[in-house]
Image 1: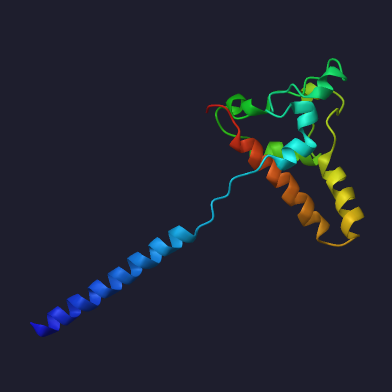
Image 2 (image 1 turned 30 degrees about the vertical axis):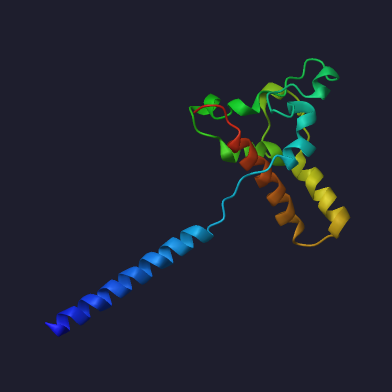
Length: 146
């Protein structure tokens, strides 16, 4: 009888420790919320601060429609086209509606900025990828509807 009570006590202690470890791990998880900073700095002049396509440069470049970036998921059967958006921003993919590439190749611009600021080194690629990913995650976070 005492042996089974000791065993039950040990099992109870282990379960309490496991439960508190899981709860502590959940409390310590960081919640990532994409910020609009990179979008405002790099994209809002054409796409507008709300990303709906009415930036101030649309008045200058008549006939260029930058598009409503809040509708990318809806236009892709409810799934955000993460890879495609990344490739358009970094310059590997064109947007057919643009005709000739009207949108700047941000990958090249970001690389030039990074090299000017930090010099030529292998970390420039990571800085550029980080900036593009920040943009893509932000665009994903502002999608309207499914």
